[in-house]
Amino acid sequence: MATSSDKNDAYKIRVRLKSYDHRVIDEASRKILETALSTGAKVKGPVPLPTHRKWFTVLTSPHTDKDSQEKYIIRTHKRLIDIINPTSKTIDSLMHLELPAGVDIQIKM
Image 1 (cartoon, helix red, strand yellow):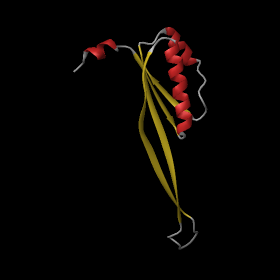
Image 2: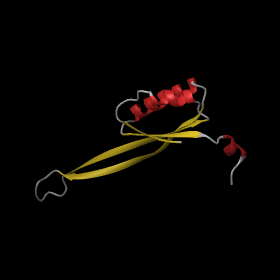
Image 3: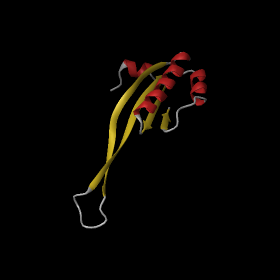
Image 4: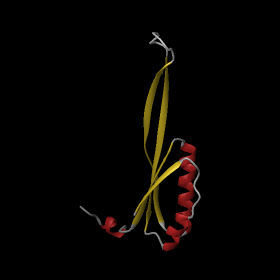
């Protein structure tokens, strides 16, 4: 069921960010927010999505000592930003935006 606010937000850009470091992803989302707001677009977010954790257990002993194990965790942090009713200036400035290394970005229109 579509509400009246959904009809008003007909054109939006959804930006999804992923990174292993939360400081880098926060800096990238801040740059995207500043760029979108300076061009006159409305912004919803950044919405922090659940952090994905992946565990790896490695045996440190080459032979029979099963109790000697190391555990490693890789955390993937995610953020979601909606840019509502962007102008052509907004899209152009987002295309030329320099983001920090280590940030995966997905853009849906």
